Image (cartoon, rainbow, N blue to C red; front, side, top):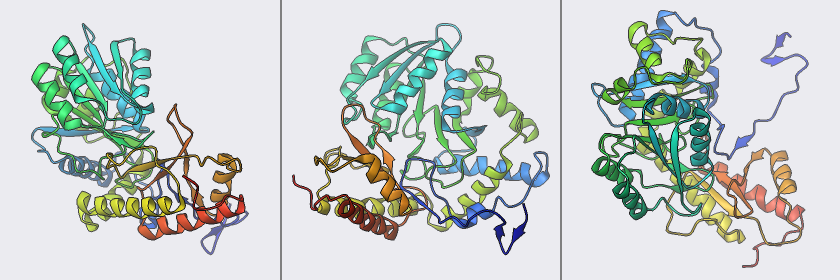
Length: 387
């Protein structure tokens, strides 16, 4: 297929859509353009870039390169979650305590089930944080846990869990246990210091708040904790220790690396720095959230979470209690206007979700609000909605 004037023959020019989702997320044009060249996996430039990316991620986690390391894994964020679990749960007498209040915590339970490890899932309401008092009671009653895992931002609802408080309890009552934090949708938007939250392993993905493209995820691990896990992995490809040892020895991935995704991520890191780091990005996302919150409230939409929740990653809204509202039609009409929202993922309420993260700005949120008003008018839904 030939390219003419920047367009591919036979392919209609597609209008860019704005993604108001928990992922995949929109990225800048310059991040996309960074992928328009090829690098070999053993290319010196690529090896240096991988080292730079790993070091930058550790520094963004607020910790020392002497004590922590970053291990990238090919695949989506769930690949890195599974890599940490399969690597860090001891083969003998391993026992995982999983604190969950949503779909992504439940997914860790599914992984543990497939791995065939001993685990216990303690569930909390989807619209509430993990309860600190309950966690303390659990750890006091049973100190035999070898691993404790939690999701920082449960994007099925938008709840932000108290990972620092939980981490303190883990290290107080089961100091030898590995504390695992899934910070998939929060790292890069909410400042985290892995020492402060007492995390042995933290997991995130390239295509979240650091605004790279999908293709790889990563674990940031305390070196002393990672070293203890040698030989435990139930998987060849997801063996985090073997991946780390290969990167340290040769600078290379053990298997084909996502070269283009890493080129994009390298550019995304430079753009994060220009924005003022995590602090600057956090301010943009919080402003996105403010604009959305005020606009949706003016239209009468009700949030799933009450005002005690201060998260700004994603917002869940109840379906309007109107006969004319049909989510599929609502979604399709917004999509036709280039605005992509997301279905809800909580089990006990009919909701939809609107993300505030990715390459989105306050004007994008204002345009989305305009489109929502237009779609409601087209569907015959009167605004503001009745309370």
